[in-house]
Image (tube, rainbow, N blue to C red):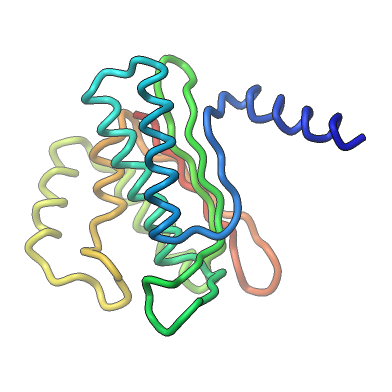
Length: 183
């Protein structure tokens, strides 16, 4: 039964065209190791250098978003560097393109604003997206941001089609947020 379950899980990932998947707590330290695995997978597939850099960049940005904004966090010490954040991240290859997909719980109160921001980004063409990105670079980061408030814009700029996203209601007033980018 155990081997059958694991093999079924492996086949499910393969059927969904996943090359790499991780579920559990993520940290900045783990990001480095996972990033190296992504690079190796890209090398195995002889990905063009430009494409490999874009995939890696999107992967890093998405994992950083989980680390910074997941509603499921544990701390090994008082510093943010020792933060562990729950989520799932995967990347794969389908329809001749790579994709990076991630998911993590978010407070329900933040889901509406996040959806609105993503809908706005999805409505932008390449020129508008570039202009909006440049404007955001000159602005101060948003109050709750742990970065430059440009992570989603960075992902959208590197993607080859509009970002896909969804929310699933989970316990309490929380939602499970999923973001997928094709490169």
